[in-house]
Length: 440
Image (cartoon, rainbow, N blue to C red; front, side):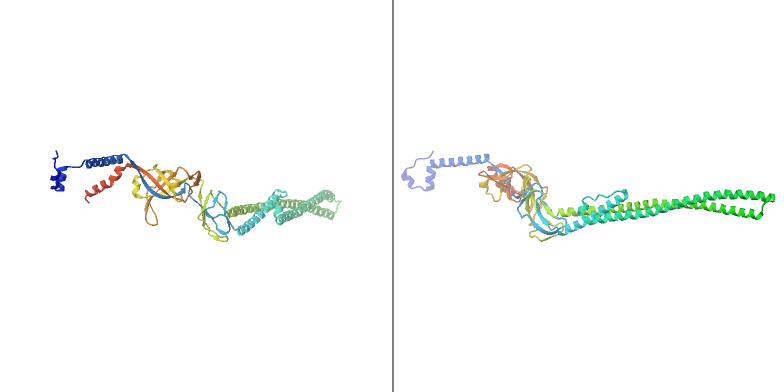
């Protein structure tokens, strides 16, 4: 219990003694209690308040599909460039037109060769089948070649007809010879019979002594002559018949040989035409590809050819098409120090550069994938790649939508968890204490 000290006595005491005698002020006690209460309330409040932990990443917007590289297989001279960087195109739109002069000349030459072979094929088939050829449109487009084919067919048929006529004439002549020799043989046969009868009679007369031996000998000589002539006539008939058969064989062989030659020529024409048709299809494809078209709908990017007349090397890249109709995602670079807290499916808040987040807001997203290992950029910095799917492909303010397109730079905050404010504030102290009492 404090003692009562008069004012006169207090004048003679030191300040420390006065404080000891008087004790703490009532106001000081109240103030101290208030401060302690406030500190306790602050500690309690900080233990209740949760703050979100995020991993800050940077990246860019990319399409889910890959960029389409536009190339030309053969290359050539550029005649017309119909797009510029940033232009939106649809699948099938012409991007670059190459010069057609050389390719069209080659195509015309091959088409003329194909038409010539087709005309020759129709001519040979008509000759083999014995019909008249139907040249169709070829007669209008390739008049000279068709006329030449018709002339060759006519001359060939006339030549064969002439050779056949000669053989037919020989056959007819031999047939006439056969008839003549047959008639001669009949006549000689009758003479032979008469002379033989005469020889028999003269022999009887000679034996009876009434005939002359000279007459008998002359008659026998006549019989021998007639017999020889009869034999010659029969041989002549056989020879004439053999000549007829030979001419008939030549006539048949002429037709077979000519048809065989035509079939052999047709086979060669068909084989050559197959090669020409293949070459023709290849050239037509090349001509069609001289108009380079967009493989997919999207935006033109990285145009490499800018002036007509430029020479493009085979397989040289002309540009890329960035797909716009496909879903877009954010490809972000995650620092290795944050990867231990990253889990697929975590929420993310994305702000797009060029759009003030305070005005346009953020776009919600979710982490879709994380690369299994790190990548290294040209500066040697290592990072993991993560893909964040966006809830929408636009940013909206005051009812106006601004589309998010591939190539935009973004900052994505990936929510890795939450902790109390008290834990957040005391963690550095805890870490410092742990490190202070640890030994290397």
